[in-house]
Image (tube, rainbow, N blue to C red; front, side, top):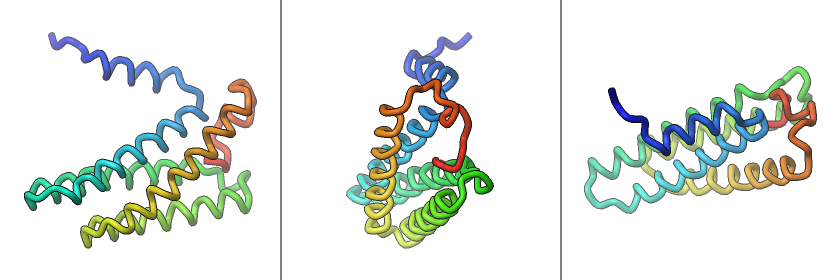
Length: 142
């Protein structure tokens, strides 16, 4: 029987016990972390290792951006949710372009955008009690 890895157990517990608002924050944090790893991949000299680092991390970011986009409630979120949907769509296109062309500039653009949204989301979480019904479901604010 394999022993559980403590960091994986901690991560699993953190995800299972997090509020929906905190789960969104975790997605932002993961995306920013993977963007950083992809950007670092551009510095690698060995071509295969470089391409794998870029591709693997950008695919992870793409998956997270897709999940953030899916979490939007376009019916209740109104214009804000539609604008966020379009912004996530733009980010997805930038990530895909960065991966296809192996160009770091789109990665920097998405890093900046996601970083700003992540910081605003954290500020909102800190100002709003976790028990607030607005944060207990995925409305149009992710």
